[in-house]
Length: 411
Ligand SMILES: NC(=O)c1ccc[n+]([C@@H]2O[C@H](COP(=O)([O-])OP(=O)(O)OC[C@H]3O[C@@H](n4cnc5c(N)ncnc54)[C@H](O)[C@@H]3O)[C@@H](O)[C@H]2O)c1
Ligand SMILES: O=C(O)CC[C@@H](O)C(=O)O
Image (cartoon, rainbow, N blue to C red; front, side, top):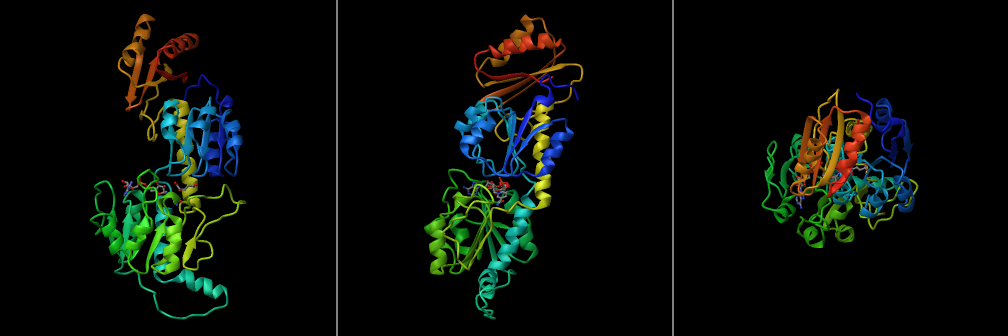
């Protein structure tokens, strides 16, 4: 690997929310030593101060990287979400600031799916209530209201990575799987698509939610949808807290229309482990409450740490943006004899010719050039065989092109 023109020992990595130590090891093994590590998310004012110094930031689901926060991040080169969800980042603002955002799209998929299956069984057997009663010294040995998972209908809302894994595991238990998704999806195993969300809600014994947080999924399960569910059916939410109207769920559980629920994600979650958890569901015996740990297994967190840190290192060392969620994706080869310049710009007509005019005018031969665009921005990587000072001059000329968002000499 070539020496980056920006020495690794000067690159600052800010890791928040107790991301796995495997991330720290990955950065260190790649030669990065300035790593600031926090167990919790930071209050916004402190976050703005810390992020202003950082070249890379690693977060989980708690830290909100809003446009205002990103506005303070003048040195930030890339963001790593050490999780699946990226709704906590203003992806559009990051893109227009020339900041790619990476995540770990599959590393905790299986962990969530296993928890959901366990919860489906516990809810069908009314174990949360029985567990609570026993803890209070009660003893109600009865089969009333308890059912096998076999032959019950599992309704999966959002049939993506997690939803499909849940479906396959559920079929292993003999459950009948139906799903609803806004996209046409290949049904795995014997799963069947439903005729829509309402159809799924009306037929399922257990409904489990696996949609991302988007404007369309906000409060998609409210009083009307809960009322459509079968009497005594159960609901599992390990997606995002905004998807369910939590007060409506509490009311449906109190009325007995919904027989039980397992909830891992909440509209408002504590900032860290020392902060209080407040929810209308607290104290309800028929509810399994978990502190957003669907993906929190050691295997998953370890893998996520390595995966996301490796993506950040690759971007830092080589410029590759493969699998970025908000950015044109470029998988770049090494060009050992060249210098590599990066140019991120607004995607407007004529940009590439303006870039190439500079190299032609300066009589610099291009060894390799890579362009990827999306609707908003373009990302051009140019490999040239020039001296360090010449590369810096070319960078300055590139930076002067109107519409330029960011330029760097990578090495
Ligand atoms: N509890 C946890 O710890 C935990 C862990 C991992 C992921 N998650 C959450 O789970 C979500 C799903 O993860 P995934 O990896 O399966 O994502 P995914 O992108 O693979 O799947 C999401 C699916 O939802 C569908 N969808 C989107 N909007 C929809 C709508 N309005 N109605 C119906 N379907 C819709 C998509 O088409 C897609 O198939 C993540 O976005 C994240 O928020 C939570
Ligand atoms: O670890 C987290 O904070 C988030 C876990 C999960 O919601 C995800 O999006 O992967």
